[in-house]
Length: 348
Image (tube, rainbow, N blue to C red):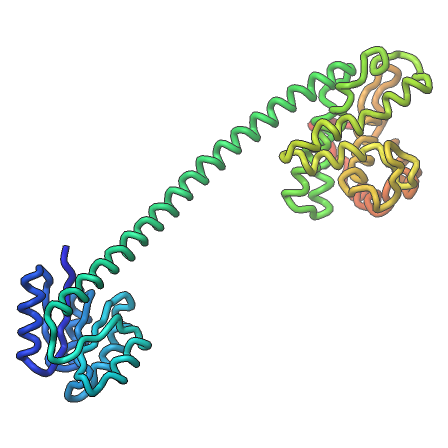
């Protein structure tokens, strides 16, 4: 559809000439004899292109140009000027006018200028619509990808939970040790004020902490007696094996760190790398406490579960040696009932 055009000029003959010329091309023309009338038309009609005479009685076309840009920021303005007022016409370009035409008119040039402006406006409109549609499509595709990634992550988690349950069953764990330490880890992370992203990574690491045992033979893993030196050396490799399994998977980047370091000790006497103090990732320092809690409060083939107080005594005894003393203080502030609620089991 052709644009609506305002022609603001104090000479009626010029207005009529432009209206007749542009009207034949299908444009909708509106007239104004001064700046006040011109502003009224701008405010009441869907004007897209305006011809503004620079020299009009009262407020000038330059002032009307400024008003037009405020009322309709996207309007395209052509200034009408006499040959002796070219400097003003050029200054109007800096104020936002598209171009200027000079009196007396070359009507072919007027039509060509308006056609060019119309085409430019069409291209701008098409580009905006394209950008708008593109943004919508990007949002839609992003949501599709987000949903797909959510499904992939859920599938990851379901598959891994099944795998970990199988590993726990392989070692004849009662219930699911790995799932319990995951919930304990989340509780401890919450008490420490760790953000959701990091606590989620810790929880994954806790769930997968023993995944490296998949590479340990049953002869060693399930041996009823004490391991010899060679067997113990093989067993001590499982944190590195687990880390190697996970490190190339972006989804498990944070978890791999805990898996590698979950047998390190605060005093540096752990394995596989003998890290000490704050060189041990906080996730692994937390896990050291969590693993002890679950190991001591769970039944074992050689003993029944120990009471919660035994855990407290052990943690206090090993404070600063096996465990980070600052984390021990936080651990001891968590009530027995909170630990029980997290694990879904009661301690003696």
